[in-house]
Length: 368
Image (cartoon, rainbow, N blue to C red; front, side):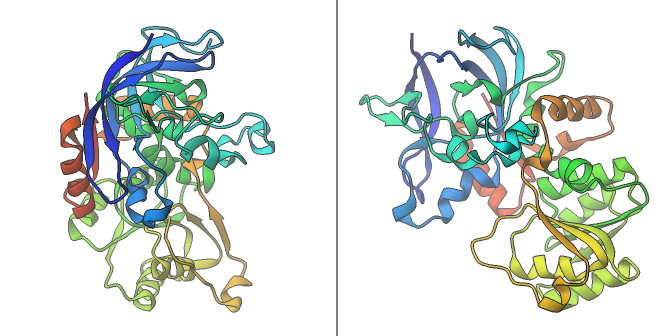
């Protein structure tokens, strides 16, 4: 039986989200029907704005940081039951070498499973009032909808006593920032870390660095207000970027007394990437999570110095383990990422996007 839902649909890559009434089909054996309570708005949801018009895949429901309540489960689903409170994260194939090695964020089929706008057989869970398909299963969930059919391995059960309004961002942005520090880079106590970009991703990394006992935590951003937040949440030093990569490198080298042990890059800006890299010690490591639309280059001499560059997807997390861990830390007051959240009703999704793009809010969350 299908369910009627209100959802934010992006019909044109450069157009607004429109609130529409859609039909949601029943879950298949490996799927779950979820009634959303909240969904974070992340830069990844807005990436279609940056694509050429000819690459836009058509009408779709985005959203990949959902939190809600299970309303129905497919016949093969044993991990959750009706009534469970859940956070929704990315999905993966389960059979490739990365999945077999329990590194699902590096699934060989990650793009197809998370960004194709459909199930692997090409079908979608949503249809509009004209009976036409609307893209679904964005990151396995398409959570900008009151109800959605979700891939079972995107679903993470959480303590029903926790506030679901706060939990959605754990599905991607917050787990990526925290996981970069705790998992990808394994920043040890006493280490130095530079974080470029003090948005939700960077600030969650700074909170995590403070939590693991890093002693020199340097935040870099273009906005003083965000640097003030970084200082509040654990940064020992802040750098207001002038836009000059060479000057930024010198400032990093100065405040770290010769170079940082680690850097975490969230901006996707080539000049900032290079500055963070050049600001490392000769055996330092740069973790890159920011996504840009142009190439970045490094000089041969700096590349043979002993430094390491590695990409970071989803903070190298296993969501069923890491998301409950972060939720518990938050409940204890040790990881206060929820203080970054500003809530908006679903029908104000365009206002939420504008506020995020302008830097007026750190983490917009839609509430249903």
